Image 1 (spheres, rainbow, N blue to C red):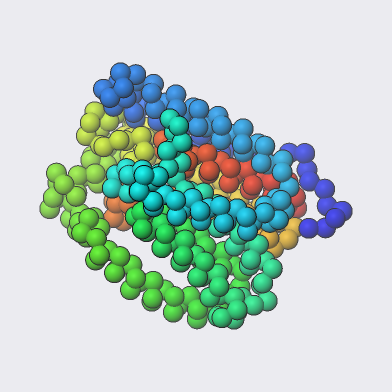
Image 2: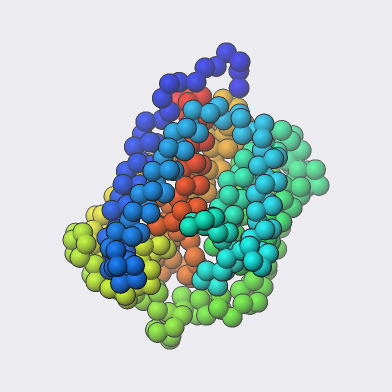
Length: 369
């Protein structure tokens, strides 16, 4: 970045409009989808909505604060941030420190709340890889000097996440990092070889865990086990189908009455489609496309390679997560535990995503849009 370049007072306005719009819809849908379950379990229909507002509020404040921090700050501290992320990722695997939820030891309790170290790792690795790849771009076509060191770091992080295990987050992390490595100029031949090796490894991961095999069979034929492994996808499709063009109306979902398990998290888009119909779902997807478009523009017009890779990594992370979540909810791929950015209920996921957007907004202040 040139010393003469000065940041604009305001970051990308359209990008902010897209994010705030998605957040607003998310808070409304968290309440609508969770009110019945929250009333039954906590005797407070607003239980999840109030916490989501708290997470969203803290995340938005952090987003605007980080947007004012020059993005080169993160390049200076990239190594320290990555080390901290690895420490947390190892700590969560230690009995007594890590908390088990849904069969995965992925959380660390902090008072009344909990954090998910894998979410921090996604952002930490993006920041570090952007620094590493921008400083060693001339070596990226070399397998030993460029491609292998970057790949090794990604695989170590992926391996630690899989020990929890959390395949969904691991896939998002690997997909994002591979996108960054590819854009930095890595050779096609390296990706072809890696793809074949990755396919074999993916098959081995599925075969090593019976519940993953059940998810594959449920994807191929959910009616084979409608009350077991196929239950979630069947109930999700039961929600989407009746929504039609206009939906049943906000708050009128039937599937949230204990049919679709915890509908405020991974399957919130199914409830949205049921209540707001095809038009509501299409509007949400249009907002995600707006974020994608503006994010890519920020990356393309960034003043240096570090800014380009940093912005692209953040946009890629969000986009890959959206594609996986929507594909799961609509039955296009097997079920995996991935939240929908900005809409699904969650603390670590929501706040870290908003912090990531804050960095993206910071890059936009220096981009020549």
